[in-house]
Image (cartoon, rainbow, N blue to C red; front, side, top):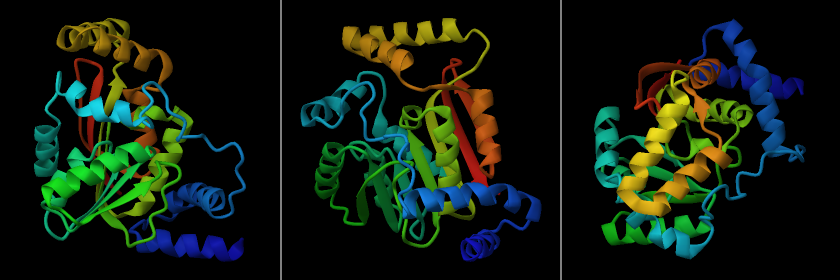
Length: 270
């Protein structure tokens, strides 16, 4: 254990954590994660492969994903806008958690050195591979895994992104996942997050308004999907997310909660 502590201490300094008090605070979490993943001792690890809501392990569900989301969003244009805002370029390496059908990963691969597309659904990854092949990009590495199980073996990366995936984790495991993502980033590396993140003021009214808006855009399917999300999945308050990000070693550079329900965060590793 002493050897592990020394290695983590050195790694934390090399990753830009110069404040000894903060390194001491992060140290137990990093050690717990090392034991959880390397020694496989945690039998109660949250099962992120268990599909919550829609079962995207099923190829039929995956095949309909892009068409259904097109009813209320333009995923390709969203991806381009995020990449522009992050200022990513040809030398950058990106991890996309919850990469889904691969739209963001493909757009990132067109301008970055390497993209690691991570998803808990093999059917999603297969769809994303087909999309990458059609786009003529070959610099995407596909990984079956998630926030708690993906092991990044390469050098620290420039950016981590996640869109409409983080709500699959309960808040305790969100905190663990954010520490893991922070550890994968270079000093000053960026984190982008977009998800259902809720302002406390008028939360019920705002959720109801979103469900009504989605029903107008996509009928019963989107209404039922949205209702199932808030009934069965793990959206969180923005003030909780703010605290989780800070405790995991991130500075929030930009935050926007659209209509009190949809949160967008641009963060930087301290």
